[in-house]
Length: 188
Image (cartoon, rainbow, N blue to C red; front, side, top):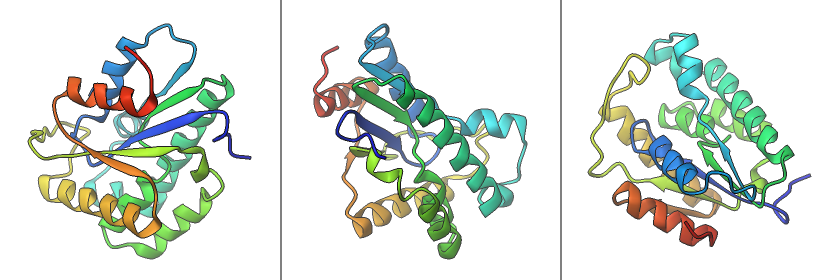
């Protein structure tokens, strides 16, 4: 059963290197010790550090299904603590959107179907705008700027096609954090 009536949950989504984790960490610092706010950390970086993967395999059904399972597990752990607000670095919809960006629509739909009962737990999504945010590759973040652009577009298309509530968020980390606090109606 979805807990939407009890919990406001927002997920930061977008391509690699757009500031999702930076924004989550800024908000965690502002609301540290507040039992009303729970945070779900990104699982992808740790997964790929422990399971080095080529870019081609990174966007395969098997890898994206494993990531989706890990995200769901981490979200359920935070839900179990019953906070009033949950802020997520990514969502269970990231995996299907990544597959859509790579034109694997059938696999993407299978991943959406796997989590269809969980989707209503999200109050809204915040798509972080890549404009003006430099892309930084490292040993884990191996996809390129073109992949980043395709993923950004796939999120926009997916949210519009499915009428999911989302906001495209740009600005500095401080401007972004203030906007999220406004959306969630929480004071720093």
